Length: 309
Ligand SMILES: NC(=O)c1ccc[n+]([C@@H]2O[C@H](COP(=O)([O-])OP(=O)(O)OC[C@H]3O[C@@H](n4cnc5c(N)ncnc54)[C@H](OP(=O)(O)O)[C@@H]3O)[C@@H](O)[C@H]2O)c1
View: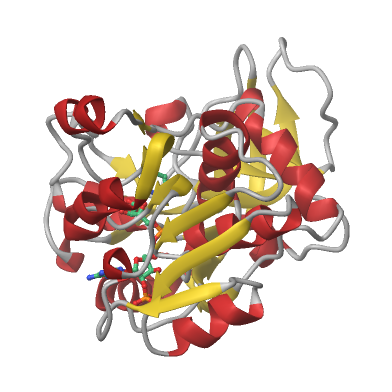
């Protein structure tokens, strides 16, 4: 079977389509025939080697995490799945998978769930990493309540668009940032207040917020501390937190490294009831993986970039 692999870190010239065979699933692994795999910012970071100190790859490495397909075989310890099930989840090698961008993938059963409702394989593949990050932040880290004032930095991205939808579903007041056609997108998703970060500074307008989810990092994260009320909570998924500053301001700050275990099932329920919807921007065949990665890094596609296997 074909897999998108790298044997060294580098730019898109290191991407190769290799002929690979996978072993039979062991323990709680599930073998799936992959139909679709979506790209995340992390995929370009891993390929380039920027994260190799914290997240080293074993070469040859099959890239990709977000995956959707059909169960082909089950490890002896797997319960709750059957051959032929339509499933989606997270196949990152860092989480015990074999990599998503391949015609077949091994995935830990805890990182897999049935595809909800009428979602296509491409729509399902577009959701796990961004969706579980938003659900974990809002339901677990922030425990967001109806009526609370919630700021999301980067509401038009994969994490942010799921977060805007879920927060509105839960009855929060949502302020967020975006640029270009992302501004219209977050309005359509229900955001109450939108700041185009290329022309305005949210921190000059917002104050006494209960909760922040920062999915941008840098100055956006730095400015977010100042908009929270004493006792408020900030979750960062993109940048390091400043505990001293948080202590001075009386804030709780959480650097979230999302684990999809369990949270994927919660995301599935939200997708099934339509509280969160998928946004596929563009699909590419495996042969055009370089173009897909180029679009990811140029940020030239609005919505998720999905590779069809
Ligand atoms: N810790 C974790 O577990 C975890 C999990 C998932 C993702 N992440 C991280 O979370 C971040 C977002 O991921 P994603 O998949 O949502 O990415 P994405 O889909 O590419 O979205 C990026 C968002 O950032 C905004 N943005 C880009 N440049 C900006 C700038 N200079 N100032 C303000 N906003 C800017 C974009 O707005 P426009 O497109 O409207 O310009 C968009 O809303 C990434 O850093 C990713 O690595 C972390």
